[in-house]
Amino acid sequence: MKARILIIDDNVNLTTLLSRVLTKHGYEPVVQNDSVQAVETARRCEPDLILLDVMMPNLDGGDVLAVLRNDLQLRNVPVVLLTALAREASGLGNLGGIQSPVLGKPIQLGVLIDEIEAQLKRFSTAPNLPAQSA
Image: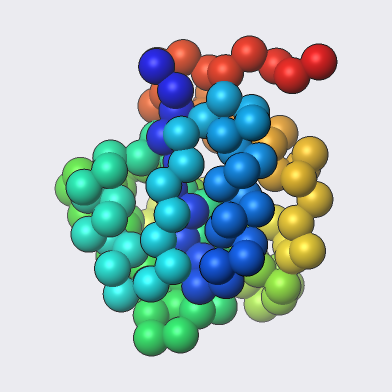
């Protein structure tokens, strides 16, 4: 069974790219470009991990993360924060007592895949991790 990864980012071009990369690496991506709908999408798709943009219109990533951490169904799902302002977002990483890594944009895809694999292993939410690409 593939690990399901929810990508929450208002940048459609980025979510399309990340979706393709994650599929290539054996993951099942789910995309949500509207931060207001993000938590409902997470409840519906039951992700193994969430990639969450920090700066979005309406609800920013910090607001979404706060709701996730207070939701009984989603509070233990690992979240990787994505932002062009990593220094400003570093304080968000420990919201709700669960440390979330913060990766800067532009995203280095190899670093992102390594972080996803590390978080999935750390939280043991994915039944089977995809095989390493050669």
